[in-house]
Length: 237
Image (cartoon, rainbow, N blue to C red; front, top):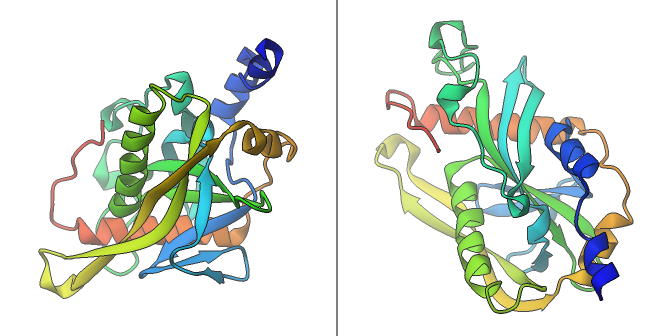
């Protein structure tokens, strides 16, 4: 048992690689758009209610920097290893006058976007997906999942949550945006984490970001900037 646990713990070289990796998309990108979930380059619709195992030890958090519609830098680490993201004010490019502007509104667009990468696995096939969260709603969904997992792991640290894909909504204070839909990752069960971590280890290194991954993250960044237009940005940490 001791040897098995030891193999699941990244060594210093793996931890450094995780922090410096230019891409953490594993398997297919799972994206949430206008109330629906889609996976992969073919935008295959994933029905509401679909269940996945969330591999919590691999949750990456931190900042992604964008330039010319592409990610150019990441400062991220594994939450399970105690990684603490920097505050936005501790990063570079703090002058809005030097930022790129939104194509539609013309407003300055912060090049740094706070992002989570949550790896999910099909509970039956162990097929892997990455839920990339940078919108407020998606980050909130991951946050709620972390809250439940944090309580559960005090008694059962060897288990990961089984989540069910859902959707919620609220009326934006700016009536022009109407009703905003957001993802819900509802915990419905718990399972032994070891088989799913082992499935992840068998994938080797992560693949380079596909154009649709870049495009999806860029669209999320632009949508978030538009909703915040005219409102002072607050630091995430």
